[in-house]
Amino acid sequence: DTGVSQDPRHKITKRGQNVTFRCDPISEHNRLYWYRQTLGQGPEFLTYFQNEAQLEKSRLLSDRFSAERPKGSFSTLEIQRTEQGDSAMYLCASSLVSAGANVLTFGAGSRLTVL
Amino acid sequence: GNSVTQMEGPVTLSEEAFLTINCTYTATGYPSLFWYVQYPGEGLQLLLKATKADDKGSNKGFEATYRKETTSFHLEKGSVQVSDSAVYFCALSSLQGGSEKLVFGKGTKLTVNP
Image 1 (cartoon, chains in turn yellow, red):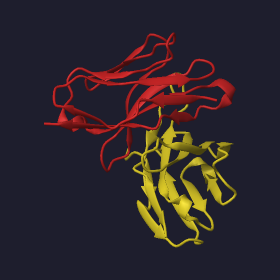
Image 2 (cartoon, helix red, strand yellow):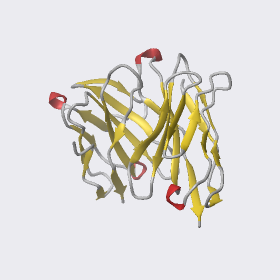
Image 3 (cartoon, chains in turn blue, brown):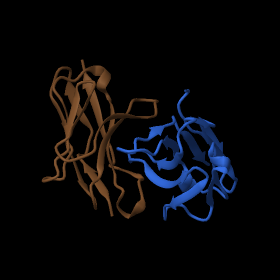
């Protein structure tokens, strides 16, 4: 088990470009979450999947953001027409739904800088 | 909605000092409570958790007790080390309303000096 993997770790792009981040969760986990973290703030929830179904999306997730989890394995988060305000660390986490607390395991994150 | 409030940082302590980081929450239902830690340059890691009132979570010398009467989950450590320097996040997860997403506080940066 290699944990939650995110790619790329760093992305620098110009305003107006599209970017895509990939997350590979822990293989036996059925839930996958996306969060956004800006400097000095706690992670903010964006969306989550159970298997391939997207169960909840935050109001923070504008129409420019889309996430997919085909076949319930890896997930992608795409940001279209990036804006400078999109600069942040994008965190992916996964968990296994079972009895007890829902413990999320986080990846190292993908840092986006929009120039 | 659910929310977490934790003490503002940064907190600077000398090695072997006692640490308390306050955390209070607002939630419907019966949330599970967590402390996550983010070491410099690394991802968030679960430090400890508690799932019901009066439970005490503990790990690496850190402790936190789930206090329903005061809606608190304060993090404590009796003797901090330089290696404890990190950002600490309090978080909750509640099944109420069908969402189990984790809601985080803003984080408290701890620096421990030798």
